[in-house]
Image: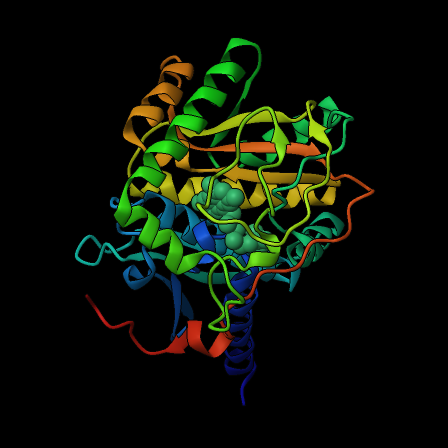
Length: 334
Ligand SMILES: Cc1cc2nc3c(=O)[nH]c(=O)nc-3n(C[C@H](O)[C@H](O)[C@H](O)COP(=O)(O)O)c2cc1C
């Protein structure tokens, strides 16, 4: 095999491995709504609408944010493996489910920080328990914000009245969601049980009762088995992840930013909980929009808190096996 052919073969293999590594990315209700297609010298990221929350997320905002998180994981995996990725977002207007094309443009000398963030992909998880009483250091929060900014997003911190308004909005969004029988049925499909089919949120990461927090987390409409203790997190930092616009490209970039700032937080020992029901319900999304006072469009609310050292480690949620998510050829068009 010529040098060029050998180089092309190892780049193709790196792309496939990156797609598999991206499986660890977070997604709404652990739906993992992405599919990767390996085509000559490129990797395509497709939205899998069969895994969309059609009731809670009819526009596909959270689906696309989830796919963006997988895209950021894949690019990080390429850099950590010594390849420079290039991403073409929403490359084909005729196929809106084709979210991105990833190619490699050459070799990359991985920085120590990239290797650490790659390790963080294995440790990152969603923690719905109250955090420790101690506040996350302001300097760490700034580094997390910078990680979001580097991906074209930003984080807006909430305090005082803003935090009170968020608490009211989150409770209202929970009520509206649970009052809708279609939404309850959809949540029932994805949440709870032992999740033998590699997707969804198993009982062991769903709180056994409502945790004591300033802002209510998502009410899944069922109790799990996750012990939450008596602690009350009062020192958490809540921030709105926002973008300049509210279209599919913004959602994809928001997902990349979510992933980048979550991995940075993991590396800094800070636990993250996304709150998306406030974004799903149009009326509460508008409350967030007003809080941003014209600077951008809300994508998600994120809670940052110091992981409580007295709590046991949390279980990892399941993932689809690589061969179900990465394939060669073309994705079946809808
Ligand atoms: C776009 C998005 C929205 C999410 N919204 C919520 C939420 O409202 N409440 C919650 O408890 N977890 C939420 N999560 C966390 C997912 O449930 C979690 O990522 C998924 O179950 C996989 O588990 P892991 O993060 O521990 O790997 C969200 C994640 C993403 C990416």
